[in-house]
Every structure is written in structure tokens, then in C-alpha cells.
Length: 328
Image (tube, rainbow, N blue to C red; front, side, top):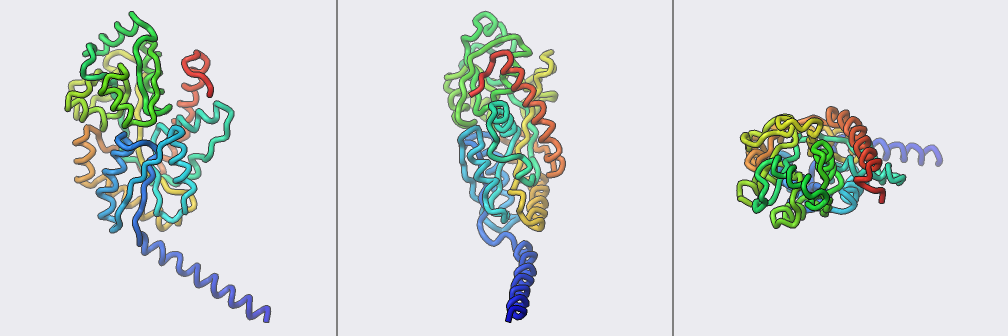
């Protein structure tokens, strides 16, 4: 009797195992969701929606965007990394989230998850920060801003949408020798509204969100915090060209799935990611918004993350030592 039961159990296990490749081959059979760990309207949200509008046709299923802001992006990311690893939940990740996790470590708290808990599918952009002011601002150049800030230190306000997007501002001010009051917001959308409304004097939004607002005369872009000028705004100088050294800051935005996702599903999603990056409709959406498509595959992105983490950790430690930021 025991041997019969054992053989029957083995037969069931083998039959289930035989079905796994078939299930992966059939993927997807239902709608997919993408968790964006920040509020709607920001750069991560825009890239996610652009990706969904093209990838849904390639996958043959609808893709739903779910915004889950909070805790510097960690709430949404935690939901993404703990989701069922079946390929039906993707998480939008970026350079900004690295800052949040490094900040947790420096505060002596155990991070709720690690980068290694994700399998990265690839990144689609590598955008520099733009140095932007309200359209009503009297500042028209970086020199205007620097002179005013040096005349009245700690008077003007610079805003950020997360801890991650505050670092480019701190780095820039350090190189310029100026000080402003930091005003944090819950995401890129609220930050842009505050900047356009004149509630903050300076911010570092990403090109896909700042350039359309500049074209609509809601913002003015004084510089690009990167090494190269952007095609969409070729007349705007880079901070490097203005002689502001070591201020470059670029952000990648890409997607990941939980680490136990079946390899066949991962391979399919990676193939779709590469196709989307070359898709003319996707490229047009990104370029129309002022961004540029720079694709980085999963392995390259996975290799880049610890290097960025080391740099960001160093900057955070320096800011703590100088008193620019305080542990929470």
C-alpha cells in the first residue's frame, strides 16, 4: 500500500512539473500590473505608462499601472518584491530608490528588502537632472541663482520629490558653495506642482517632466546636471560646461520582478523590454516629453546598482558629517 501511495504521489509531482514549462510558455494569460512606488505624474509614472502602452500589444494582455507612494518608494517596492513571483507583477525601479535603502542602513535600520531580491529586466532611460525654477522667477541663468543664494543664504527653498531626488540638489549646492532650505514632497507630481506654483524656488526634476512644463511656460530650465546637452533643449548648458565640477547626476528607470519568477517568464519579459526600447512609438513618447531612450539590459543594470549604492552612501555620510541632513 505504501509503495503504491509513493508511486502515485511521484506521478502527481512529475505531472505538475511537466506543466510548469507549458504554463510559462503560455504566459501571460491575464492582465499584468506595474507597481510604481511614487505618486502619479512623476518621471517613473510617465515611463511606466509609456512602456505599458507598447508592451501590452506585444504581450497580448492589458497592463495596469498601480501607484503606491510612501516611505521614499519603499512601500511600493516592498509590495512588488513580495508579490507572487509569476510575472504578473512588475515594479518600476530607479536610482532614487537606492538612496532610500542606503539611508535606512545609515540610520541603523534593516532595510525591508534588498536589490538582490529583484530580477532586473532592464532600464530605458539614463537622464540627467535639470536645474529648474518657476517661470516667474527672476533668475534666468545659473549665475543669477548663485548670486542671489550667496547674498541670502538659507533663504531660498529647493524642493525634492524624494530623498533620492534631494541628493542632486545637495551635491550641486555643495559645488556652488550655496545653501538653501530643503522642502521635501511625496513624489515628482507634487514637487512639480509646487515648483510651477512658486512654492519652492529651485528643484531638480527629470527631463521627461520638466521640459514639457518649460515648453508650456510653467518652468525655466537653467542647466542640465549632466555631462551632455539634451537634444530636446540644445541651448541649455550642462553644469560641466559651466565649470561646476563633480555635480553630474543621472537616473535610470527600469523594471524588475521578484527573484523567484520562472526563468522562462523572465526571458520573455526581457525580450519584450528590448523590443519596447526599439519601438518607434515608445521612442516617440519619450522624446516628445523631452527625454531620451538609453537602454540598459538586465545584467548591466544589476552590475550598476552596487556601484551607485557605494557612491550614494558616501554622499549621504558626507552630508551627515556636515550637518546638511540629520538622521531620522
